[in-house]
Image (cartoon, rainbow, N blue to C red):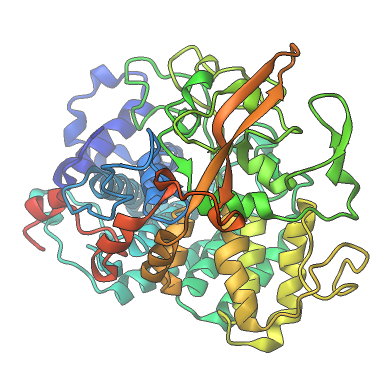
Length: 590
């Protein structure tokens, strides 16, 4: 456990950190822990310093909790050898003393407390401002703080205790102020929507290059649309998500891989992303929440290229990527392979940019011609996530920065492809509105065409009639099934704020999904190839197959997944994180 912050002292720590970041004379402060909103906040410039502290809280990796949130879904397993694991999140045996919910809770409330400091200071300072520039800047800083507070509460609402959490719309100053009861989930939802709606008309559509990463009107509109979709308010979700598509100038990037590495950060598809850098703050630990880097690159990569392989794609996900049919009419699916010959791609561009596969001849990995040459694929591991690793710029994750295991890849929280797929879901109303199928297919196929994947629908139909189609006529329900089990997991695996975990919960499929996946069986075969020096190399049990493809092949128990998960998962217990034990121990209001 990296840290567990008692919420009673969070505001004191947050304010002390804020003061330290805003003053060169920190040691000359009379007593930072006694500083209050009345004595520190004096002008618009102080509001800007405070807002930086709120954004600094947003980049704490414990908010997204990417690894643990992914373990809870169906798209990964914890690595370190098959088939056994003692990982409580994958096994669905976690409780309120587990580190993950405690860390996430503390990180989110730190952000809320910092945002409240800015908001309350603005309310006091605003009447004293006289310069037009100061008035305009202060309004903007307040709007950003409200948008971020709304986001933090949106994440609490969708993460903890069925949405019922303590509500703080003030700055706690004494111990008793922290003893707040649970507010009903409906109250929390109304609160964060009010914050979003307040901020929306005051935020800009875009920022200058030096301010990229700050909240925009497009980001807040997308968050509102996502929230209404999660609530199954399809008309409102449709309205808002369509505004994101039409009103802000977002476009899909030409290459899906532009969304997962240091190249093309804040690109045309990015709606909300968290800025990171390999710069280093001395005096604090390399993994401290106040660092400006992240540790994502080392999570999923194997040891030969500098990672810990602590989060790997589940077998069903690997097979779905492998089974994607490239569009035979798209010239991008004919390319030069590692051996210098021109061939038809075996795997889709989306698969190649999302996973490192041993027999992918077209995509380098850590400056080697192929993943098979870069790493050994041992321990029955058949694929590694590429997303948020530095495979495209270095030969080893350790070489990214001078300090051990740091990455500067920005984390994309929301991007246009996600909005397209949410919009498609809203159009078909979760599988109940056949009238929305035709338009929904248009947006799903925009996402698929970007990666040169075979399009959905009858041959010659839709926006791209000359492209290859699968010649299937969809209903709202069959298209919803495709969204749930193919399109969203393949496009958005290992992204955003707990996307797959929340999707499975809101669709009500988690229990049956784990049960069904527990019945699937796979096996792996060896892969032999000539490396760049001409030597024959074999990667043992590295190419995954469905056992049903070869009924005479014995089932390999090493590839059985989710058996214990299916038994342990209780929707009433594991769909949300529980209230953390640190909060229960410290908050008598509960």
